[in-house]
Image 1: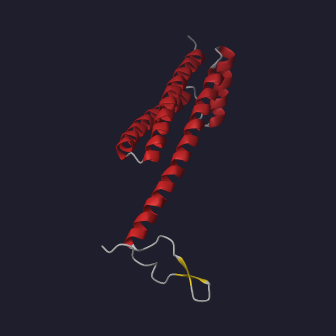
Image 2 (image 1 turned 135 degrees about the vertical axis):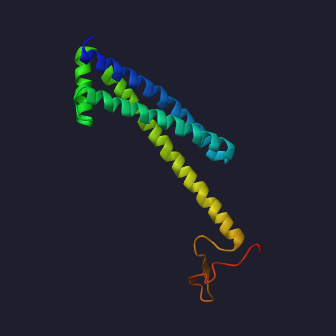
Length: 164
């Protein structure tokens, strides 16, 4: 087997492994979304561990890909990877398609993760606001009306609803 054919085969194997890991990560991120929706802390804890393990595997794969590029005497940059894709298309084919599917899965994971972040921030904000109101310290100054009907911010952050 030529050096180029070996490089292409190894890159193909890595991309297939990354696709598998990204598919699992997407499922885990969807489970995280479901857990965030119902505030299931046990599932969120388990999901966090799964995400860390998958990310470690993906980072290892990326490092291996960079090492393969170095062995091929190519700088570890996107342009070099594009050259490898072109070379592999000429010799064995299919690597560009694998890369495109891998990128699509990565983008889906990024979108799901961003959505989870928005959901998490919304939940955090609601919890913070509820605690602030219960303790009598609103997160945002309350707008109150004075005798003239003009809005004014409460000087003391509102009245206590609950005494601790």
